[in-house]
Amino acid sequence: MYVCRNCQQPINFASEVCPYCGAEQNPASAEAAPSAGKKRGTLRTATMLAIAIAGIWGIIWFATPMRMQNPRPAAEQAAMDSLRTLQKQLAAYANGAGSFPQTLEALGDAAQEPAREAMTGGYSLRYSPGQADASGKIHAYGLVALPRNYGYRSFYTDQTGVFRATRENRAATAQDPSI
Image 1 (cartoon, rainbow, N blue to C red):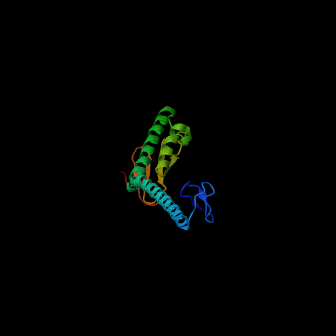
Image 2: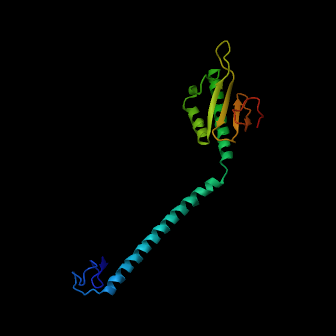
Protein backbone atom coordinates (compact mmCIF):
# COMPACT_ATOMS: atom_id res chain seq x y z
CA MET A 1 0.00 0.00 0.00
CA TYR A 2 1.00 3.60 -0.56
CA VAL A 3 -0.47 7.04 0.12
CA CYS A 4 -2.35 9.18 -2.43
CA ARG A 5 -0.38 12.37 -3.12
CA ASN A 6 -3.60 14.46 -3.14
CA CYS A 7 -5.74 13.20 -0.25
CA GLN A 8 -3.14 11.25 1.77
CA GLN A 9 -5.39 8.18 2.00
CA PRO A 10 -3.87 4.67 1.81
CA ILE A 11 -4.29 3.09 -1.64
CA ASN A 12 -3.55 -0.38 -2.96
CA PHE A 13 -0.52 -0.59 -5.28
CA ALA A 14 -2.68 -1.98 -8.10
CA SER A 15 -4.95 1.12 -8.19
CA GLU A 16 -4.30 3.60 -11.02
CA VAL A 17 -6.93 6.06 -9.72
CA CYS A 18 -7.48 7.05 -6.06
CA PRO A 19 -10.88 5.70 -4.93
CA TYR A 20 -11.27 8.61 -2.48
CA CYS A 21 -10.42 11.72 -4.54
CA GLY A 22 -10.22 10.36 -8.09
CA ALA A 23 -6.65 11.58 -8.66
CA GLU A 24 -4.70 9.62 -11.18
CA GLN A 25 -1.81 7.67 -9.72
CA ASN A 26 1.30 7.06 -11.82
CA PRO A 27 4.10 4.57 -11.14
CA ALA A 28 6.58 7.32 -10.15
CA SER A 29 4.38 8.42 -7.24
CA ALA A 30 3.83 4.78 -6.24
CA GLU A 31 7.57 4.27 -5.83
CA ALA A 32 8.09 7.56 -4.01
CA ALA A 33 5.53 6.80 -1.33
CA PRO A 34 7.13 3.59 -0.03
CA SER A 35 10.48 5.38 0.36
CA ALA A 36 8.76 7.96 2.59
CA GLY A 37 7.36 5.10 4.66
CA LYS A 38 10.84 3.61 4.80
CA LYS A 39 12.19 6.91 6.12
CA ARG A 40 9.54 6.91 8.86
CA GLY A 41 10.48 3.33 9.80
CA THR A 42 14.14 4.28 9.97
CA LEU A 43 13.32 7.30 12.10
CA ARG A 44 11.22 5.15 14.44
CA THR A 45 14.04 2.60 14.76
CA ALA A 46 16.58 5.34 15.46
CA THR A 47 14.30 6.85 18.11
CA MET A 48 13.83 3.50 19.85
CA LEU A 49 17.57 2.87 19.76
CA ALA A 50 18.23 6.29 21.30
CA ILE A 51 15.71 5.60 24.08
CA ALA A 52 17.32 2.23 24.81
CA ILE A 53 20.81 3.76 24.95
CA ALA A 54 19.56 6.53 27.24
CA GLY A 55 17.96 3.95 29.54
CA ILE A 56 21.14 1.89 29.77
CA TRP A 57 23.19 5.02 30.37
CA GLY A 58 20.83 6.06 33.19
CA ILE A 59 21.18 2.69 34.90
CA ILE A 60 24.96 2.82 34.64
CA TRP A 61 25.04 6.43 35.87
CA PHE A 62 23.16 5.60 39.08
CA ALA A 63 24.52 2.10 39.75
CA THR A 64 28.22 2.71 39.13
CA PRO A 65 28.93 5.08 42.05
CA MET A 66 27.62 2.47 44.50
CA ARG A 67 29.84 -0.23 42.99
CA MET A 68 32.91 1.98 42.98
CA GLN A 69 32.84 2.20 46.79
CA ASN A 70 34.27 -0.65 48.83
CA PRO A 71 31.31 -2.17 50.74
CA ARG A 72 33.50 -4.13 53.19
CA PRO A 73 34.34 -1.31 55.65
CA ALA A 74 30.67 -0.26 55.87
CA ALA A 75 29.53 -3.86 56.40
CA GLU A 76 32.16 -4.50 59.06
CA GLN A 77 31.24 -1.26 60.84
CA ALA A 78 27.55 -2.22 60.77
CA ALA A 79 28.41 -5.59 62.34
CA MET A 80 30.44 -3.95 65.10
CA ASP A 81 27.70 -1.41 65.76
CA SER A 82 25.18 -4.23 66.05
CA LEU A 83 27.40 -6.04 68.54
CA ARG A 84 27.81 -2.83 70.60
CA THR A 85 24.04 -2.33 70.67
CA LEU A 86 23.50 -5.90 71.83
CA GLN A 87 26.18 -5.48 74.50
CA LYS A 88 24.35 -2.46 75.92
CA GLN A 89 21.04 -4.30 75.90
CA LEU A 90 22.56 -7.36 77.56
CA ALA A 91 24.19 -5.17 80.24
CA ALA A 92 20.86 -3.46 80.92
CA TYR A 93 19.15 -6.83 81.15
CA ALA A 94 21.82 -8.14 83.55
CA ASN A 95 21.49 -5.02 85.74
CA GLY A 96 17.76 -5.64 86.09
CA ALA A 97 17.70 -9.43 86.29
CA GLY A 98 21.07 -10.03 87.95
CA SER A 99 22.04 -12.45 85.18
CA PHE A 100 22.46 -12.62 81.42
CA PRO A 101 19.63 -14.33 79.49
CA GLN A 102 19.69 -17.86 78.09
CA THR A 103 18.72 -16.55 74.62
CA LEU A 104 18.41 -13.17 72.91
CA GLU A 105 14.64 -13.68 72.71
CA ALA A 106 14.53 -12.55 76.35
CA LEU A 107 15.49 -9.07 75.14
CA GLY A 108 12.43 -8.98 72.88
CA ASP A 109 12.20 -6.66 69.89
CA ALA A 110 15.26 -4.72 71.05
CA ALA A 111 17.51 -7.59 69.91
CA GLN A 112 15.88 -7.94 66.51
CA GLU A 113 16.90 -4.52 65.19
CA PRO A 114 20.68 -5.05 65.64
CA ALA A 115 20.33 -8.50 64.06
CA ARG A 116 18.58 -6.96 61.03
CA GLU A 117 21.25 -4.27 60.73
CA ALA A 118 23.98 -6.91 60.78
CA MET A 119 22.13 -8.94 58.13
CA THR A 120 21.93 -5.95 55.77
CA GLY A 121 25.73 -5.78 55.96
CA GLY A 122 26.04 -9.49 55.23
CA TYR A 123 26.59 -10.73 58.78
CA SER A 124 24.77 -13.14 61.06
CA LEU A 125 24.94 -12.84 64.84
CA ARG A 126 25.35 -15.65 67.37
CA TYR A 127 24.80 -15.39 71.11
CA SER A 128 26.36 -17.98 73.43
CA PRO A 129 25.49 -17.74 77.12
CA GLY A 130 28.15 -18.86 79.60
CA GLN A 131 27.74 -21.65 82.13
CA ALA A 132 25.15 -21.05 84.84
CA ASP A 133 26.37 -21.06 88.43
CA ALA A 134 24.80 -23.08 91.25
CA SER A 135 21.98 -20.56 91.59
CA GLY A 136 21.21 -20.75 87.85
CA LYS A 137 22.59 -17.29 87.02
CA ILE A 138 24.66 -16.67 83.92
CA HIS A 139 27.53 -14.23 84.42
CA ALA A 140 29.22 -14.45 81.01
CA TYR A 141 28.34 -14.57 77.33
CA GLY A 142 29.91 -14.46 73.89
CA LEU A 143 28.69 -12.63 70.80
CA VAL A 144 29.98 -13.50 67.33
CA ALA A 145 29.32 -11.73 64.03
CA LEU A 146 29.92 -14.11 61.12
CA PRO A 147 30.31 -12.71 57.59
CA ARG A 148 28.64 -14.31 54.61
CA ASN A 149 31.28 -12.83 52.27
CA TYR A 150 34.76 -14.26 51.97
CA GLY A 151 37.51 -11.87 53.09
CA TYR A 152 35.38 -9.96 55.57
CA ARG A 153 36.41 -10.00 59.23
CA SER A 154 34.62 -12.14 61.77
CA PHE A 155 34.08 -10.43 65.15
CA TYR A 156 33.88 -11.67 68.73
CA THR A 157 33.03 -9.82 71.91
CA ASP A 158 31.87 -10.73 75.39
CA GLN A 159 30.81 -9.06 78.63
CA THR A 160 34.24 -7.36 78.92
CA GLY A 161 33.46 -5.21 75.86
CA VAL A 162 36.72 -6.05 74.06
CA PHE A 163 36.30 -6.67 70.33
CA ARG A 164 38.38 -9.34 68.63
CA ALA A 165 38.55 -10.09 64.92
CA THR A 166 39.98 -12.45 62.33
CA ARG A 167 39.98 -12.59 58.54
CA GLU A 168 40.35 -16.36 58.58
CA ASN A 169 37.39 -18.34 57.28
CA ARG A 170 36.06 -19.15 60.77
CA ALA A 171 34.28 -17.54 63.69
CA ALA A 172 36.39 -15.19 65.79
CA THR A 173 37.15 -16.32 69.35
CA ALA A 174 38.49 -14.89 72.62
CA GLN A 175 42.01 -15.94 71.51
CA ASP A 176 42.02 -13.70 68.40
CA PRO A 177 43.76 -10.31 68.52
CA SER A 178 41.75 -7.37 69.84
CA ILE A 179 40.92 -4.39 67.65
